[in-house]
Image (cartoon, rainbow, N blue to C red; front, side):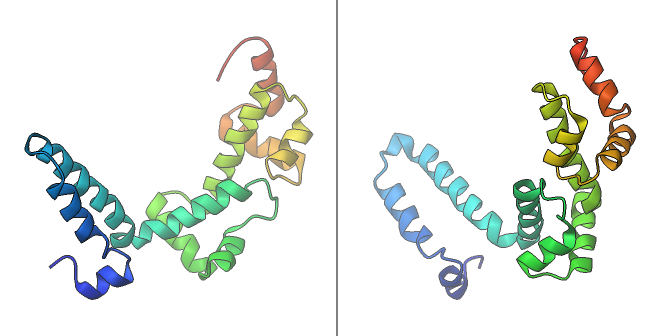
Length: 165
């Protein structure tokens, strides 16, 4: 049995059974298939977060990163401390689930933001580096070139000439 009474109460799924009954009993016969399918999809969406808590951990890391990537002190250790996990475990787990190390993921988020800033007209490499969470603009430039293939100055130059990467 998928829904044990105790797990329904603990996971706040007890409301699904009356919801199923109400929906199905109040539906006209010609719409029963559509309503039943909709109710099942709703139930599956509620269950997905409970069945796979592993994704919940990764999602917490991603969410924390997206909200804090501009902080130059952001690290997997900071996130681990914030969400209550061991930093080595979290780092290993993130890499296993995402097939990319956390530092590579963070860099990619920062570079995507840098590119959007360059495309919006900001041409100061130092300012963009700071806005993207880098405390050292030289490190930003070197990392950008390694990752994107051209330096930030070259990228800005291509943008001003009408070229897009």
